[in-house]
Image (cartoon, rainbow, N blue to C red; front, side, top):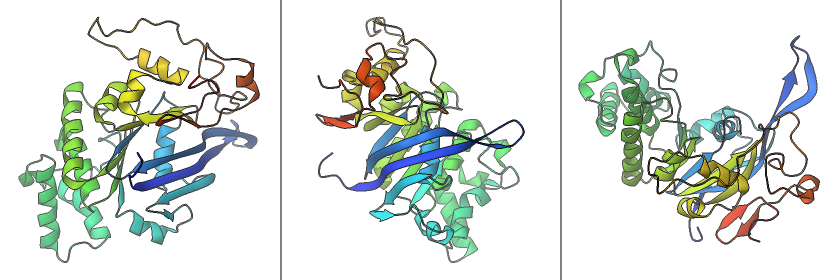
Length: 326
């Protein structure tokens, strides 16, 4: 990605949660939700975060929005460190970074009409000079995402799941952001509706030169929409690289097993699994020493338990494995 402009960057971003006992007493133990994650998002691209449930990808997305405060590390947006920004300073950032949430049923206030929901960011940030201008902008946004403007006075429960997600997208677009964090935006939708929403996101990206951080556990969806992929396991990044290259030749063992698990209807494309991924995901409270994947990795050796692998460049990719590229 040489020559590309870095829009957002994380440096050793970490989030730990104190573990409480059943009696509400704080323990010295912590949940290592995200541990030392560093990556860049380039202007105009779609970078996808993928991994099993509990790997920390949604926590990471919410930290970028400062909805969750990081324990350590830095978040740089447009070259500025926004990690320590006050609420007032973040109001300016939110005009450039928006979020689409996973559940269109829960993310919209059922007491508000669609026009109010989409127009709320415009009112909060005082973008429009009059109520008429706000209403006109809301109608424009509704048309943009495929919702008839005459439905402006309806409530969220009067729309289908796909339509509600379109409302969420319109709301995210209201302030003309540069970056949109998409947190599992199609996982709660029927498969037939998923493709419509994905196509809408791609069309909007081309039209408005948007940048996406796309969070998903569905590798089929990720393959369709991503330019690059960031694979996470137990709060750590395993591999980052071009989508087509990773699908063609995964370098990290965990990435390899993830791709082998993707179902295919074409018998000619079904991969014969060389080995089954054994064991359960280790505890985020007491992660394994060295490489966090080593307890499930069939290729693990002694060094994997002694030393944590560093992210290293292998061609155009970054991989955290002692033996990648050998």
